[in-house]
Image (cartoon, rainbow, N blue to C red; front, side, top):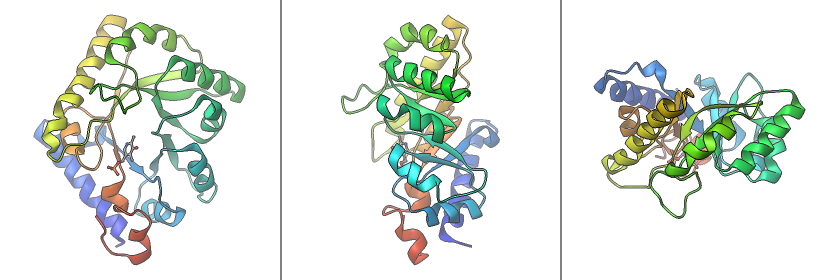
Length: 238
Ligand SMILES: *Cc1c(COP(=O)(O)O)cnc(C)c1O
């Protein structure tokens, strides 16, 4: 078994225990393998281990990588998207998790219409209020949601957030809880279903699952700290 396959197996087991602790069905948690900075060989090793959904942070990097891989893979954009790359993003990705402005949403809607497709998106929310992070402020999402929801080609499936990094993952819990509560408020006030909550990374995904994550985005625990190295050496790196 490859190191990547072993890592994936361990993560699935950890997702299952976290889900079990709060009485959730682990099949309700999608693992997105974050393959940014990984060469295509690494992605291939993950595909061989049964992983089909991958997350990339940058359009240019994803474009180069996707062309090296075949099969029915699902690509999600998880990093900040500039409006001038919206067209490429609509071509490449099945879901854009990082919609952080109305202007970007408009561009995506426009290009999705040209491409004759619907584009699944998540609204990135900055629940921790860290200045360095992209995303809507929690108290502005309610005001923009009707406009976003009216965009014909966009399918708003839920919310995404990145918690601040803490050594102790328990400290990320309030951010995850805040995203879930925001989702619940928005659903109630606006009657718009927002089923997906994308939250949790290598350091804190178990806490995120306990707080209701339906999507976790994990890179380091699968591919190692220095990414590519894990599939070249064939040894654990994380
Ligand atoms: C890099 C990245 C991840 C994965 O982080 P790891 O700590 O390597 O698991 C998840 N989400 C976003 C938005 C990222 O940029």
